[in-house]
Length: 263
Length: 290
Image 1 (cartoon, rainbow over the protein chains, first blue to last red):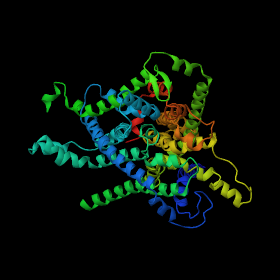
Image 2 (cartoon, chains in turn green, purple):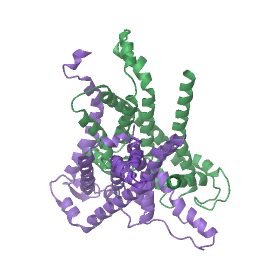
Image 3 (cartoon, rainbow over the protein chains, first blue to last red):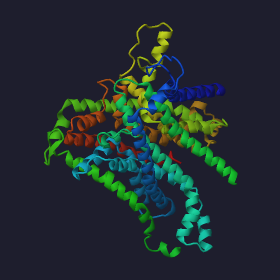
């Protein structure tokens, strides 16, 4: 009896996982379809859409914009997020709960509203839409997530090491760079990766903030979708998934390998 | 350093100040400007006049079109939230309770969708339901139909698209709260004579409520604030309140109306958040990250 229920739960879970991944798998497979249409049936195996993709200047430009934007967002959001997380993890102070809420609150503001608000504020300041606006906007969207991720990882770092360094005569700055920062590195990477992904993936706010003529990968895809799914979009989807899934997985595997070898 | 504990320690505030400043400048002040702009007057495309008048607000309050949009948004958000909870609870329970050695794999797979582009995940459903999609391909292969059936661009595909994207949030939140439950509680209830179903319903389910509620809040608010999914997967009548904002700002360049609609959406979804935080507190929301 108990086993039967358990099998049922297991089957259900597997079905939900299939629901989550089957459509993505279809995109990955269709990227190699030689047919001139983006859908089924599959006519043959071919790299032609990847070649076509690499020759599409608009997409390459969008990809470059997205990569630069994501990297800059990661730097800004991670810097701010780590400082804030340090304050939350390392100190007790009055109003801490309120501050935590304030730091997380932007997550609960609908992104559409966040986008319109910032846009209107910039309009009032007579600042035109620019890459800078996208950068600031993406950073503020990523910040709460970075704070949460980094805070969770920082809690695990014991303070004994720092106190040992201090008692051995290191000044606070030396302690930070020689002890605290290396210990924090996994948290820094996790935060930066998260911020990059959030920026690289954003479309809701980006549509409002981008200057005319500037496209990120998601807005470029959105623009191309108006007619149908072209096979190039499938190929681009494949490339994007490789970037946003492959890179973190490889980083994680490398980190594990590196840690095992240094021990 | 015991001496610093006596006076107010400035260091945490120093560390917090860049983030707090950024949030003030880029979130708080802009929200105030939305309110201010909602009283401005729209003259022409992208031209508006500084004013203090209630024209935009009275239009939003009285025009039936906006009421329909609010109704549609609430309805769709509730449907997506309920379906996501029903679909998500069992996998979360399974992952939390399984003794399966490769549990980490199930968890990794749960986080994986967060790394995959939202727009790719959304458009992938065109490959399932579209005219050249997998289902139509299958139907034609089996000889069930000659011409492709039109299964796309309706409310159903919008709902599927939303659930697909937001389900991981739901599962993760429920999982976190199930994982925190003492695993001896259910067996204890069983030895006291409860049936498995009773043990689940009276012990595990109530204890997992905070996670379920946090997941529901996130899915509800995220759905209610969207506009891109209906544009990709929906037909002309499948619009949400967010789509009106998009139309007002991006298409009609009517900034005061866009501001009024944005503030309305903020109030509506803000009300849900406030209601939730009164009942549950906001702490649960951050637990999914640990």
